[in-house]
Length: 404
Image (cartoon, rainbow, N blue to C red; front, top):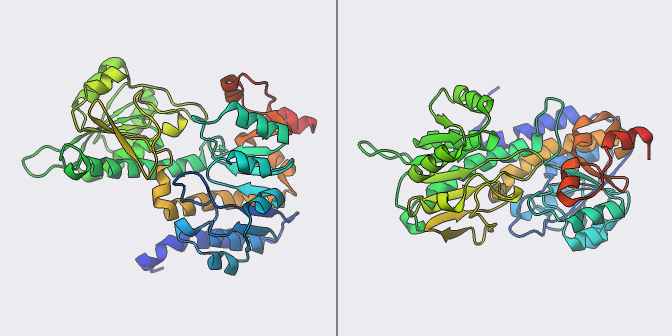
């Protein structure tokens, strides 16, 4: 089949439509798609194509006015796909049974929600508060977090897609801030004939680290990857045909790598937990003046001690004469691509919930959503969160089995 390059953006959603319009829905859901209100958040969780799939399966979709405008999806596109447009965020939050979001709800949005609703969104572990968790539990909201959704193949599908985008974008961002006009050293990542390339040190050999390494190699940079998981380092070496240099992330190698690096990409993290802080202030102090740190795990707390959250409207600050870029939602800057990625994972889950007759039936069958649930039937269901906030928890499988 011959394809025009201008058609490729829609291939994934066309395939999704063909496979998901099944007509076997046990229960029609009322799904509310709100406009994101978090600072600089431009993504939305469902595209107009996703709405057409949901409505074809018998579900009602309510979209807040201008919800997709920053990702260049118009209200008319959503309406043509079968959605109703809501002019009141409060009405949408209070009436929808299921709310897929990108960012966690604000306090106001949470106040509008009611018992029995299902919320699917990121949790942002580095910024989640005990108060938020208590509100979710006391209200009886079923909370499903992007960070916890794990499929049967032990992958985190939403996290993976966002990490692929983040890793690729991180190097692109760093290249920009190395330029003189951005206050950098005035160095090209790839160098030119007779002039060595820049050095990129990547902390973490996970998905973000892998895609950062791929992109940095594409620029022609010299790439170091540090991690304490030797299996991950070997996998990455093989995947990239040994074009990278790897090292364990101990104090000696971290210090040496940061001293020589023009760019540091912070991508060290453990799924479902706060990011480990590998880089200390003294290590940053010894870095080159005008070098760049992109801490991609700042939403999980950050892996560099000098990192502080920034925004797309004010993305960088300097400390010890090193440029720090610490925007938590990097994929938001490519909102259309990121929205398609979210849509292609989330819509099948929404179809599964409807096919199972609701969230209770679905959690029996769908291990990914069961793994993703952190608040259910007025109980906290994730031990990591219980430990973080010193709160009691109940295992989700026990709650489902006992039908509490």
